[in-house]
View 1: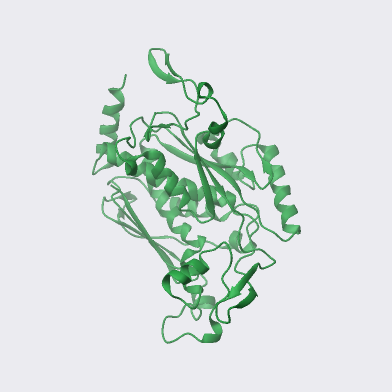
View 2 (view 1 turned 30 degrees about the horizontal axis):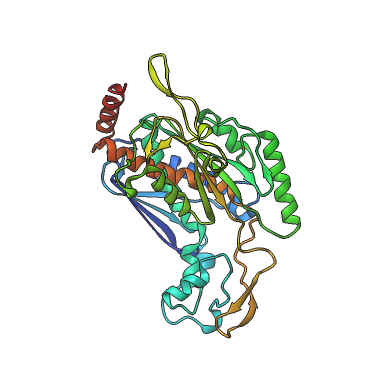
Length: 383
């Protein structure tokens, strides 16, 4: 069983991530982790600061000579601006200056709910941890999970299918071979026409001083049948994947396969026919997204997540100042227009973690070779 923990604040000294349970022998390097973090930073609609920042990742434990040891993996991502810009802001010594407290919570963020829950009179105590900056730690851990899955022939990728009103009309599902082309798109869209429309949509909304959400799709190829189970609610693979995607900041909806579109279809057109092809079991479509009864079917797994627009807009929204209990305007914390392309990369990371956990649950193994051997034996015994 895999376990993951992250720690750190948006403007704190560093992010910390720990992954326990990954088998020994998985090849991984700091460059691979840094490459995944670089993919998270890019995407049309992000601020210039995001494009210029670099995440200097350091692997503290769990890896030796480029391979995992089976022991807990610890990773840090230092904040390059800590010493020059944020040290005083995040200092923990002494009492904070009351005049520096943030008391105007932002609608759509965790600010007010968190302040009420923990009894804070300074919403920075909430927003620093609730920030999407935390996803950098999850992307770092996802790099390890993706490396493990790749050694077993399982590959995870994502692409953007909608930004605001601009949506892809292509029905072609990208494959792992398309990932470079997807990442080359400014909005990580496979369809060139859709990519152009999405860029134009971002430009239009930027001029109107507003923000945009959208939808990204995550696909996993090479998953064997049998991951997850129907026997208990918390073992259902689709439930676990949905929870992982919903945990990403700004995600407000998740669907598996054709998801909500299935509600408008008749049963005769809603399911994946079971066929024989060349003497082997096969399916006639991918409407269920590769999961039935909480268990993987052996088809590609297909998931979509809907991200709301950034709640912090250039024109701050109405709120209440908690210090005076009078109407006010919310604080302003970021200037990005859209982060859906980055959301897809985070989606890959959390999906990879759930799939790696499900693989180890099904096939076990303290070493990569042991897991690979157990998986191979299972697949060879399938009808």
